[in-house]
Amino acid sequence: MKRLHTTILAIILFSTLYSWASYTPASQRAPNTYYFGFWETFGFVFMFSIPPFVAGAIISLVIDMIIKRIYISSNVVRYLLQLSLYSLAACIIIGVLFVFDDGPFDLREFMIFLLFGIIAANIYLHILLAFNRIHTLLIDKYSK
Image (tube, rainbow, N blue to C red; front, top):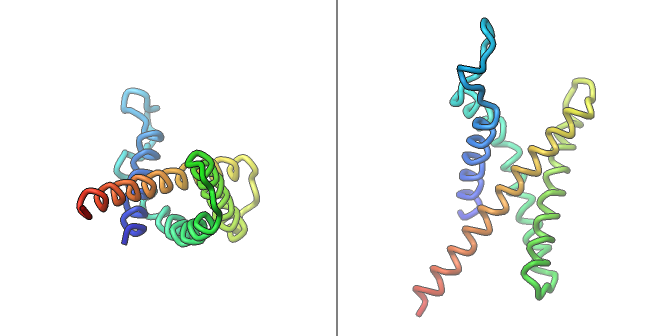
């Protein structure tokens, strides 16, 4: 259930950040040119980011199993390993999506999608870490 909540919140946050970053204010718009509004962009990004985020949530289960099997005493090293593995998982997911794309391969477009994938994976990771921390604090508080 925690991963479902993490996935939903990560999709909402990623869609919001992407929509905010790509929004063009009315004062900067060229005449006779259509620009997507914030909510239009949000809707498209939300819909199209659901499958990669679901795939990422499934892969995160595997990553967490790997992390649990490795003894790491330092929280910083554990965090950096998680950050690296989640970023690698994002690169794999984006790579798979590009393999199934029927258009010509464009390296610039691929790199942009990799960047967005890594940002999305790190949003997911940090929300999951926050939920884990909140869960731990609540258990510590109410188990006594």
